Length: 84
Ligand SMILES: [Zn+2]
Image 1: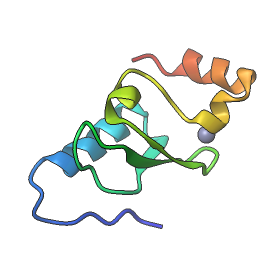
Image 2: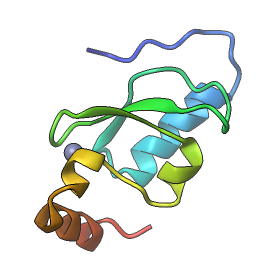
Image 3: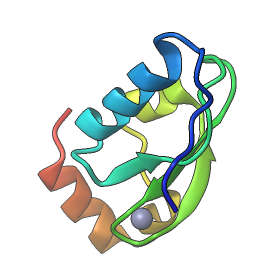
Image 4: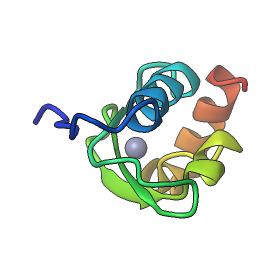
């Protein structure tokens, strides 16, 4: 359940975890490892439990859980609450 990160990677994954926690308002957790901005990362949306992969840049641009995004109502609420 808890995310396990390989130690020895300075900055990157740790920084990514902080970004996700910060921008995702604590609603997203990093499941996998951050490799680079060109590699997808695995996130879990804790609200619905959906695990998915996304490019870091897309997440930073405000793209969120695709599962919740399918539902317009959810999407609306999400956008309403989360201002980047
Ligand atoms: Zn979701």
